[in-house]
Length: 277
Image (cartoon, rainbow, N blue to C red; front, side):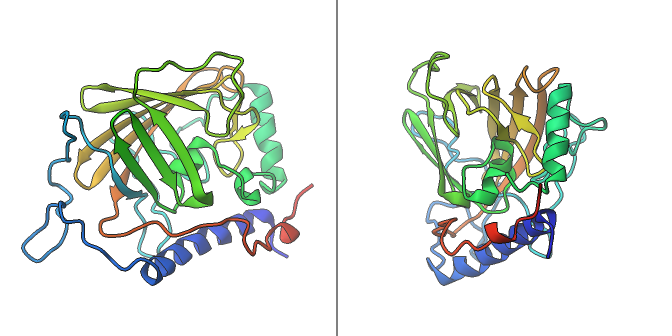
C-alpha cells in the first residue's frame, strides 16, 4: 500500500490530467473577443494588460501555474532578484536555510511529514492554505468588479472575497474563517491585499508548514502584461515564525478556457488508503 506522500503525489498528478481531459469534454473552447491576437488567431501574451473603466489594471481571467511537458506543475524558476519562489509542496523551497520557524512550528511540520501529511485539509476535501491555493496545479478565475474581487478556485471549489470598498478589517473577536477576511487597495498598478482572521492550525503547503490565527498575509498582485500575473506573498505570523517572510511567483493566463466543476468529496475513496500515525 502506498504511503500518503505517494498518494498526495499521485492525486496531484491525477488532478492535472483530469483537469486537462475534462476541460475539453465540458465547455467547448470559446474565444474571448477582446483578447489581443495575432493574424492567425493566437493570443499575444506580451500585449499590454487590460484596464478597467477607472484606469486600474484588470486582473480578471482564468489563471494557472505554468506546467512542464508532462502536464505536471513546472518547478518555479527562482527570480534573479527579490523573494524566492515557493512550490505546491514546500512554501520555503526557495530559501537556502528554509523558513524561519519557531521551534514548536518546525517540530509540528516534522510530525506532519512523519504522518505522511494525512491530516492536510486538502486530503479531506477542506479548504487549503494560501500557498497551496496559489501554487495548486488546478486553475483559478479572478472576477474583478467595482469594489470587489472574487477568486474562484477550481480546486475544492474554493471561493475568496476581496473587498475594495473602503471597509477595514474586522477586530480580533471576529469568527475565524478558512480564507480569513481580505481587503485591498491599489498602490499604483499593484493591488495590495491584506488578510487576517484566519483559522488556527492551518497548512501553508503539502508538507505542513504551519499557519496560526495570529497570521497576517499580504499579497501584491501585478498583471505584468496580458498573459502574466505576478504575485508576491508575505506571511507575518509571529506565533509560528521568528520573522515575516516573502515569496514571489508568476501565473499565466488560460485563454478561451473555463473552470470545470470540482466536487472534492464526490466518489472520494482516498481516506481509506491514507497511512500515518
